[in-house]
Length: 186
Image 1 (cartoon, rainbow, N blue to C red):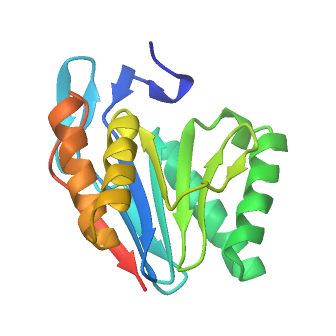
Image 2 (tube, rainbow, N blue to C red):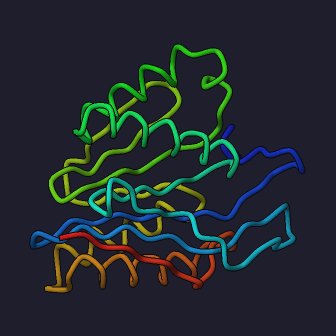
């Protein structure tokens, strides 16, 4: 089964796993590099995460690249306007749900700073996890399960957990590779 987020202009575009973890005052956000169309790998080294607000905020996406880049730009402008991650996330979610153009965008965002970890979706959700990890994309459930286990049973820092969680997802999900990018703050 595929979600509406997996459909691109060329058919079913898959290949994103984004994982975020907070631990010990550090927030890490990482993603794999694979983009696939059906059974064909189109790119193995895509970067799906970025820094914003002079490096104080991290953002990653799953879904259509063009749509995600539009959302990144809109989120960054809201972040500049409100200078507060939570407020910017809520305002983007409102825009995303009500704006005719934005409603058609097919992507999900994870945004984070030192204190906050949020998932944003086009149906207007701003979700803060009960624990200190979030994941989206094709291999998201594998990465999330790995991260939760590592958070509970190891002393690894946030960056190590994100890296290892993404590696495990790459071993299990055919749409996820081990070309991993990780950014940290804190």
